[in-house]
Amino acid sequence: MTKQHANWSPYDNNGGSCVAIAGADYCVIAADTRMSTGYNILTREYSKISQLADKCVMASSGFQADVKALQKVLSARHLIYQHQHNKQMSCPAMAQLLSNTLYYKRFFPYYSFNVLGGLDNEGTLHLPSTVGYSSQGSGSTLITPFLDNQLKSPSPLLYPPVDAVTPLSEAEAVELVKTVFASATERDIYTGDKVEIVILNASGIRREYMDLRKD
Image 1 (tube, helix red, strand yellow):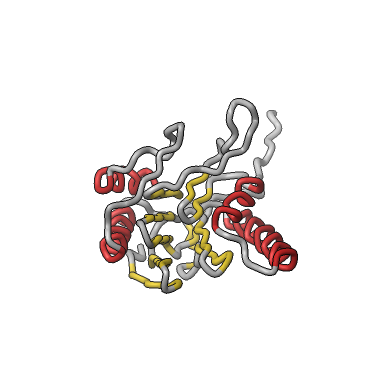
Image 2 (cartoon, rainbow, N blue to C red; image 1 turned 120 degrees about the vertical axis):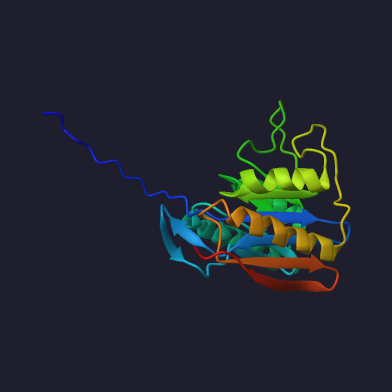
């Protein structure tokens, strides 16, 4: 009789989708609030957006235990930086720190990271170029083509990097984010319940919410 071995892993994909659109003087970051495992919804009110500094926000999908661990590391490093320099980290500096601690797909405001990292052939680390938009998570395969069609920004994978500013007003970008989430919710069971939208501009940070499908 063949002996059966149970396969168990501490890692899980808690689903969800994140989107960011960067304009000339604003950045819109959004994520749904559903956290699930398999076909079970763990909570409908989970925020996937974390504020790292006064004007520095990170949205993350996937395994939320890893996300929390990453946020704690970044928070601790940021606190040390504040004590040493008597000021908060800038967004590029935080992006550099994130590059050094990255271990799976993340989105950072104005910066898009992936598991390939930012090393050239000589092993030199480069910050990623600013990109016009990005999407990560379980609904990204549905959202990204829509954004490509609407915004037609150069690919963030181009090398040498090409900066791309989204040619939308802030209000238009917010409406586009609402549209893509409403569409993705219809076809991705791991995205839903509500979308949290964070808008960063010269005036500061504000939040908006919109209900999505709950089934």
